[in-house]
Length: 154
Image (cartoon, rainbow, N blue to C red; front, side, top):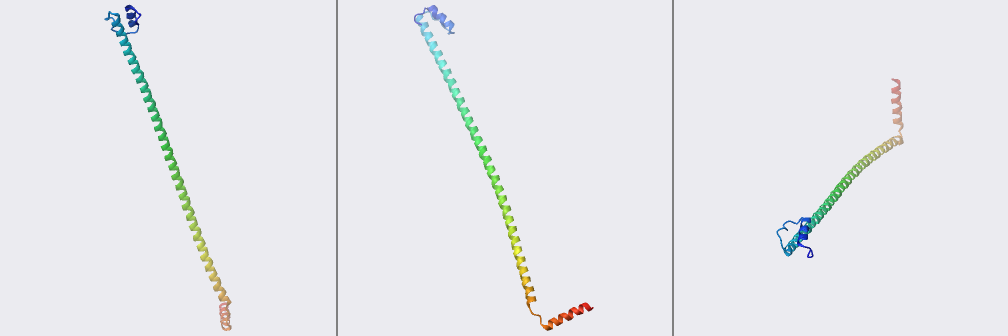
């Protein structure tokens, strides 16, 4: 910039959209003004770049946070589903266990009833065996014969 003339600097300012250069009539003042404007523009560009990067990073962090929240929500739903399945499975097992207990009780009751019936039949058979095993005395035998004859003759 130092090697350029005042006119070339004015052209440079027009070409680069720098405003307010026409009031400077001395080369050094215009050079200071241009350097100041360029440094201000550089600072503005740097600020814009920083803001752009900052907003990009915030956006990335928000997306990552959103993704993590979605993953947590999915894991929570999967866990709830698994717990519901386990609960349903436990209910089924409890119902099957209850049914098998009821069947076992019925079977035990039936076996008990069968044992009671067998015992009663055994006692009845023993009673009959006792009655038939006893010797009938002649007098009793004679009384039975007479009772039979009386029945048939009537």
